[in-house]
Length: 465
Image (cartoon, rainbow, N blue to C red; front, side, top):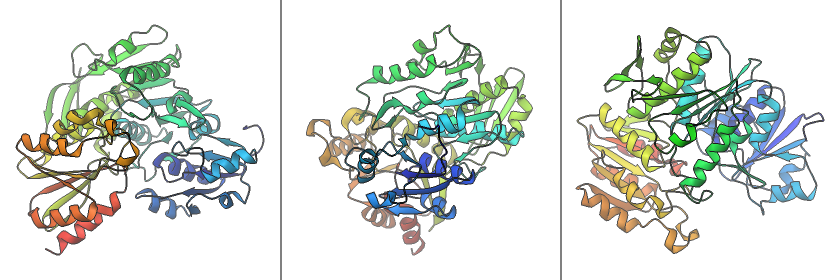
């Protein structure tokens, strides 16, 4: 597939964070790049426009009329898509994004793969900044946009390639997890929970695919795993490669103790060195411990790591303050799993200890639209003062016995003593908040999509109060 010259590449489904980032990075390397998607949400819409990558709105065979040398088909594309059908009909060269990355940019590099149910984007971003800050010029691919780096992917001549390893499948024609392609020399596994209910039957199926990743770590590599995670523990008991555990427990080789959480930062120690992290929350301490373990394995010192921590500016859509209007702080977060929502709200409670926190949630992912986390979802809002849940996306597409039950969700949240409402869309939510939110309140919006531009609409409406 990759044996002849490739000059032009078309990305079908370019709007995803990884696809858009990879497309931009390939453009930087001299390829002619085009793309198509049904909808491109922020921040990737502005990102692609800034790169001047032509993006066709909608999928159509005519989008391939220029006969690109290679078509990269995103994992959200299925049979019946006009471009996928055209590729198959005309026997055009095509591949998944993970396969493209493996053959064009990872093979021959020293690959560090960051995996886990939660914290992948933050951990990969922080690790990449540690390498970049210390002059190692790494190539990288991150499923988000770190503020220090301005884009989610870059391919360099460095020996290092750092990549966020997603367990989701690669494409309709390749049902293996994406991270199976990434040739890990070092594999970080932050945690392991059930997620992606549309492709994994149960927790054991998730464990199985993580086990496949772990098998790929070579004997001269390193497996770094969260030693505090009970689901992950059996998978770390391997002998084919070195294994180190990180976590807050004393049994881990890389562990934190004497933790001190502040409203904007965290301090923690490993033997003989105290670290300061400009992020809050226990989940971020674990992310940082994973970064420390990997960076030290690769030859960086504690002082070099801390110097990068001091200048790390976070990631878009991860506790990102979008603005303040009418005295109300509006925050955007990508959280779409009960654990992620719970930990994000715990971090917000540290930062805004005495303020009213509104949690606004869009059940949009293939897991949260289902009832697999019916009870856990209700419990995840414990640190919020009030909860607003948007209408469950595409609920009619699921069998009745698999659907999230909004009425029960509302009842369970209200039973804990919180105000909770179920509203149909972003406009209704903005109207509700404009009426009830007061100066000094904090509104955190949880969604893995564009949510109809709710942040801008809310800030504009609050600004008129």
